Length: 168
Image (cartoon, rainbow, N blue to C red; front, side, top):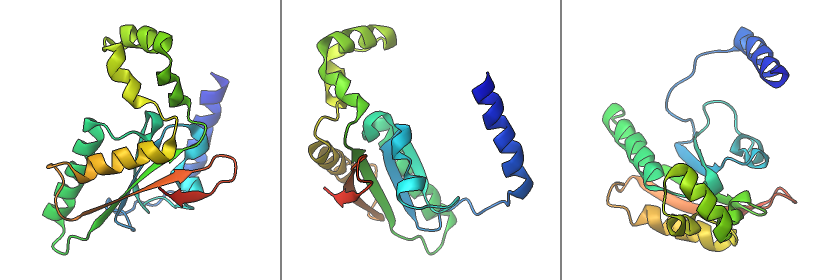
């Protein structure tokens, strides 16, 4: 519990200086990235609170749920803003991703049993070559009928060693 106590104390300090912000991102961007703590887009993109919306998933993979979230945000912005801007969706995968373990059939079998999923369907979650997987996910977003014309999708690879972000 000491770690949670520390985090809650940090929230108290944060709340003393917190100011409410606009629910729409300043940069009209949605960042899809991995939940790995080394790959926090706020850090590697130098973002402040309110700069962009962030969706974090295992491996930064674009799932149907991610597509639905992007579609929701686009619909919300189109409905609530007369001057609805183009939304940049940035898909970021990274080097040394822990999701590479999905390549291991033993892990897939154990994890699949845990979440009641077909182990073979989990293999596609692996990020062993982030340049390839980010392009697959970019194509998946671009090909979705759920997203309107106000979405611009791009993909990048974050190198955890150098901190560099490069287009895929």
